[in-house]
Amino acid sequence: VMKNALFFQKRYSVDSLKCNVTLFSVLCLVEQDRIPVMRGQWFVDGTWTPVEEDESDLIEKEHLECFRGQQIQDAFETDTLAKTVDRKDAVHSVQLSCSHVDWYSVDEVYLYSDATTSKIARTVTQKLGFSKASSSGTRLHRGFVEEASLDDKPPQTTHIVFVVHGIGQKMDKDRIIKNTGMLREAVRKMEEKHFAEQTEEHVEFLPVEWRSKLALDGDTVESITPDKVRGLRDLLNSSAMDIMYYTSPLYRDEITKGLTQELNRLYSLFCSRNPQFESSGGKVSIISHSLGCVITFDIMTGWDPVRFCLQEHQDQLEGEDLHWTTHEERHLLEEVQLTRQRLRELQDQLQGLKTATPTPFPTLTFKVENFFCMGSPLAVFLALRGIRPGNTGAQDHIMPKSICRRLFNIFHPTDPVAYRLEPLVLKHYSNIAPVQIHWCNTINPTPYDEIRPTYLSVSKNTASDAENGSSPSSSPVLVRTHYGESITSLGKASILGAASIGKGIGGILFSRFSRSASLPSAVDSGIGDSEDGQSTFAFSAMSPSSSSSLFDAAVEMEHRIDYELREGLVESRYWSAVTSHTAYWTSHDVALFLLTFIYKQQNIKPELQ
Image 1 (cartoon, helix red, strand yellow):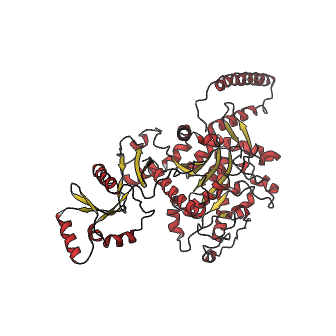
Image 2: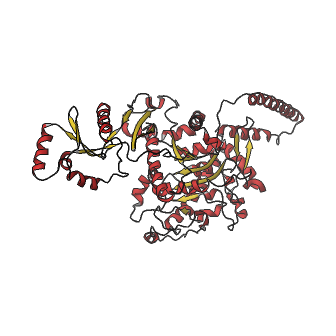
Image 3: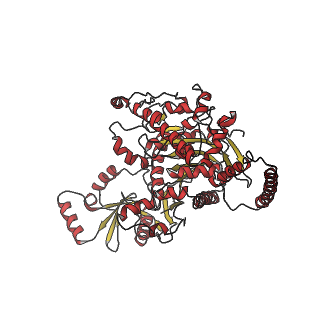
């Protein structure tokens, strides 16, 4: 349920008595659910539940008649007031329908129930020496917790962060809203603790739910699902099936279009309600989880596998003239080439007419400042698309800075879905440990940009894992031997093995990369504009044999991309493998990490492109 809470505080002055009237209204955007709007003047102590409006009006009337012009205390000191009440009698009382209210002073007001059991209990406790207020009274407060002020308003939002979900949203359509709420709560705690001085800036996190609006195959998959083990099958249909949908050429465009439209809709809605956001240079970042990282990446870079395969097929057709030998065959080949050239000209003319009109496929209407991936399998998708390490260490190799200023890959070391991105930029970074995210209670941590790369040990002595833990008050880069072994051997072998299998099966997909492996520019990646004006991403790759001589171990990353959460000191890796993929939302370490880079870049002037 998406809820927007609007707080309206109106301040009145009755002589020297300050009266606060708080109107709390909750607007629910779900069609079926309706939440009443309540006007609160008097509130119950502890729960801050508003008193019923008719009784509240009567209490307010009596209060103003008796205490107009008197001062109230600046703070509610419960213990002190309770002792004061015990030593005096009520100065005023008013009878309600099923209860009565006693005033002991201007800010000492208590509500008592008139039920028979309450009267008996009150009589017994008073005979035992307890006061009436402390035995059965409920204290009432006038106004909200804190006194209203004309300057009481939150700072203007200067940075919005869209939170994109991954698989499993069909199973629980409100999950991303709950997860965003937990992340927002963790962020607010870290803001109060570490960024209290940021009074002129405000970061807002907005959930993006894109799955429920998609039609996809309708109920076709449900109709072909057997009844046996139905619970498990429904779980898989509602979660893992999203991966199959996205890898299907039939439904992929629907998914990317749905997410793009939802992102643009939320951005337009936010700007309409905050018109100063764009004019004041507000920034936008995206946090994506799991499969959402891949979808968001493809939207930002304009990756289109159908267009890519068609281009590969066209390149293959243009190279079929090597075995034509006879005069007749050579004549036919010339006719075919002229026909293709004419067809290409007609296609260019048609494309020119299409670009003159608005394109039906939407693109993002805002610039992305930071792209945070959490528990992301993006590296596997890029590896299977033929991405191979370069030799510059620039982020542009996988994510151009003209599209997104910074790319972050956040993962837990035992998350089975997450993979590293840095080895796809520089090969030797498979032997360099990812940057470890500081604990939220670390004292004077080393700035992330100043942490030097640390090589992983290839030792197979897993018994030393227990010695890798460090005190939460320090922040050294931990050398995890078991993790280094998995990356340097299993991870590398799986990626290269998957690529070789893909090359054998999908020759069209990898033929372009194998042909360009001998070119010096094959290690570079470029950004191009498609014919319809949409940003597209052109990937280049190299075969492992021809690229080994071009890698320089002395080259470092322009900016670190992989950031690893620290394992708990008493954490079971097997249990963490089950829970770690969804543990990012409540992590205070992740919340502090996000704020560190968001607030750090608020005052950085945009680079000249």
